[in-house]
Length: 266
Image (cartoon, rainbow, N blue to C red):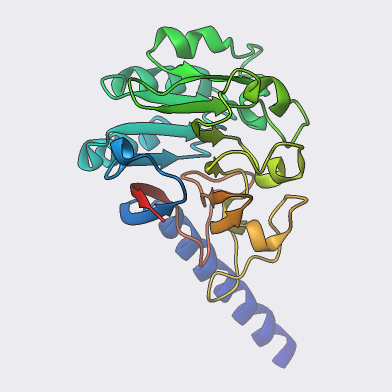
């Protein structure tokens, strides 16, 4: 009899955890935080940079809270570090989202899920460019009229990245922001060059233990780099917990994340 009671209790606890995980995964809200960046030019002090990652736009219902976040942030710059798609309909929804926020300066790089087939289709990154995004795939360009550059690499998780090619045109003295899908970019030669590196991919662990400790982060860099701000070379590395989910549609002790960083000199 006791065995059946324990089984029923475990099943009830599992159902409650599942429902809690679904609610947490849907609880996207805008975070605002300062970010100290070494070598930040005075012209960029106070820049409001919205960092999004791992959107995984499988359902149209995800678009509404995302658009609300961008509207609430009213950023000076939006960067997206990959995995906009990753399921049927994701290509079209990613295009709709990018087009809807294209009034803001918008830069992105690909993630591993952006190469997944979507109903027999593969993403043509020119689609994102036509929607107003600057898609940086192992390349760099000046950041508007500021004395800074922004670079982006292809997906480091699948070793598609070529950091050397991305950094080649950047002047040695220039302030540099680097977009990369995975924090595993830190293992590449030249990874210490950017003053600010923005990544995602880990989902913060997605299903964590109380306190946000991730049993698994899905990166060679290890659980230390599951999320947060870390020293990196002569700058800082920022790893987002991401917006969406993968495999399981739940999050536990690891809420979705969209951060409006206000940059200031370290």
